[in-house]
Picture 1 (spheres, one colour):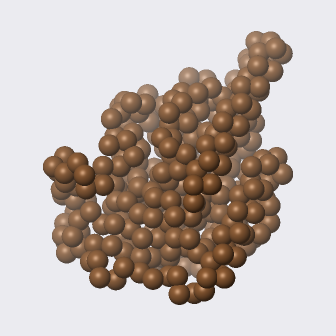
Picture 2 (cartoon, rainbow over the protein chains, first blue to last red):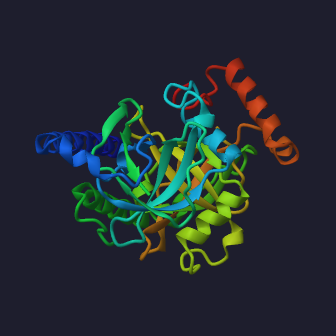
Length: 148
Length: 184
C-alpha cells in the first residue's frame, strides 16, 4: 500500500513542522525558561524517533535493555555507527508514552549515558522535553531532554 | 476502533485506514491467509502489536530479541494485571524497524507467542488481514512472514554469536540476496 508510505512521510514532515513552531515559540519566550529542569541530569541527551516524540508528555519506563539486547538493537538500527558511534555509551529503554486511552503507545528511548549508569528503574516516570531538535534527519531522530 | 488521541490528528486517519483494510480483508474472504509452507526458511506466525505500529504489507527488519530479564520486565510493567497477555511466559518480545517512510523507518515493538524465534537482522513482512487482539489496548493480531537467514537446523543448535557471524558473511558475500537491511 503506497498510500501508507506517503502518509508516514507526511507524518514526519508534520512532526518536524510542529517541532519547528514549538522551538520558535520557546525561543520567543526567552532563554530564562530553560533553567527550571534542575532535577534531571542535564547532560543526558535523549534521542527518540520523531514518531515517538511528544513534547512535554509523560512516559513510563518499562525496561532498560541489557547489554546483549542493546548491542543487537543499536548495531542493527545503525550498522555503520553513524549516530550511535560507541554502543557502550548508550542505554536503550522501552517506554510507554502516556497518550491516548489505550494504555499508551510503545516507544524507544536512547540515552547517551557516557558510561554513567542512569538511576532509572522499571516503572519510573519521566517527561519528554518541550524542545526537540533533529539529531539525524535521515533517521528522523529527535534529540531532547528528559526529566525522570 | 477507538480514535485514541485527539491531540494527534494523524492518528484518526490511521484508524480509518485500518478499518478500510480490515473491511477489505473481510470482503475477500478468509482464504487470503495462504502461507508459503514449502519454503523451509520462511515462517508465518501471528504476532501482536499496537495499532499505531501496524503497516499492512510493509517489510521490517528484526533489531533485537528481548533477553529474558527485558522480556519479563517489559510484560510485567506493560501489562501488570495480565489483562492483555494471559500467560507472560508464553511470549517473546522484539524490537523491529518497519521500512516505511524510508530511509528513516519506524521503530516498533512486537509480541510473538512462541513458535518462531527470529534473530537480529532477519527480515519479514506484515500481513494484510489484522484482527483485534484487545480493543481496549488498541492491540492488533496479524500474520507476519519471517525470512530466516539461517537454515533452521543450524539456527536451533548454534548460539547467537555464531548465527551473527554467518549472517554477516552471507551479507558480504552476496549483494543481491536482499538481506542487507535498510542501510546496507
